[in-house]
Length: 324
Image (cartoon, rainbow, N blue to C red; front, side, top):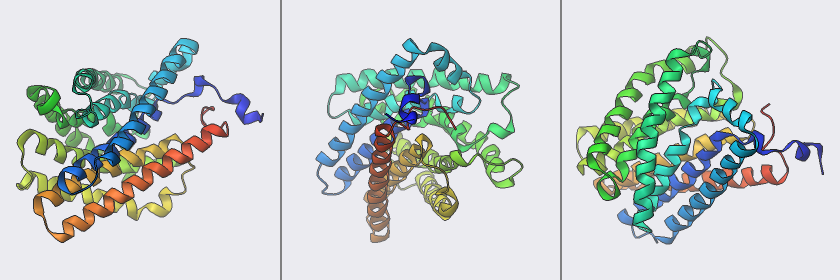
């Protein structure tokens, strides 16, 4: 047994690992959307949903075990100035799985939706309160991950009309969109002005820029049925432009060492793929179709690649280790 394996411990299980559930579940949602728009077999979405459920059970079970066996390490993570932004990935993961599973087991999906929807609003208030009152959290801690606690609310409306509550869906949508618009200038200033060095290991969080407009487009469609008006068109443009900007940074982004932060790529790519598929179904022209098919294939390959690399890290005893 290697020295690295000896150091592997649940005490070092990172809460951002719940992004794995988001990425796999988001890919399931993208393929579910594809099966509604095109003649795509539903089993593909079910396979990714199955992977998301397994990931949820494993990660959630391990995280509960971390609280039981290493409570001080778990509590310290909640106070970490960087990782605090990732804590609400727990409730987003629940919402994503609930949305993807609504056609498979509606009663269970409904229960999960309510837990995720209410839980995420509570998480939003908690994180915003921490940011506003803690002197140890400053401009140097701002990353695109700051969108997670607030913009995660736009995931709630995706299944609100089918297994949830439309009024709560609109409420969450309003919270998510308004705070996204409020935070966007702060985050852009942080990544564009270079006043402080951006942590290399967090470079994958650049992809989080893609998620808010992509999910907002899907939520707008879920709440209004509209994919042809100015709102979805603007959100689609923003989604694709942020994707292009992220891909343009690829040479720099790929220098980040592989680790849990790489899961930050998966949900945004899945979200923009789902948004592109939705727009392709609404517009019905070949440019939209080509973009949608390309992004769906790309998102699927990325999530499978990151999953495989993560499992290799775990097998080599290099996943649950102290943060470098």
